[in-house]
Image (cartoon, rainbow, N blue to C red; front, side, top):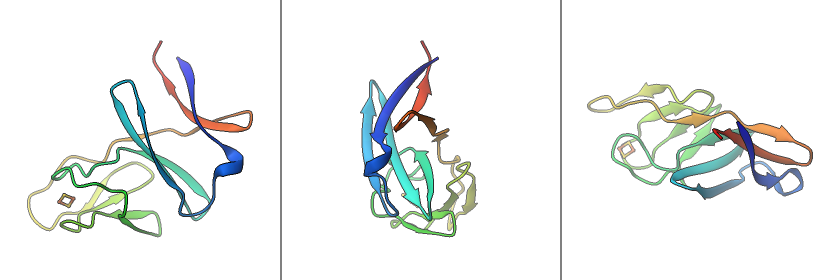
Length: 105
Ligand code: FES
């Protein structure tokens, strides 16, 4: 596994959201109430962007059909219509003065 840096710690703050593309992987780094989360940037329901999703108490709500997901593990918590898969998440890794994720290879 290799460490892929995404952001310097000094640039992080609450309500931080930023998209990254690493090879074929699309990621969104989010800071919410002091915690960092790394999630896929599009809703697993119908691919709506989660850039402006409402986040409260560790729960992300997609603005399109209001499906809700746990930020910590991506679990689907509420589905207005047919259920969808969980939100994909990655573990945030701290290394030196940067945060990122571990990638194979
Ligand atoms: S696209 Fe996100 S809830 Fe439907």
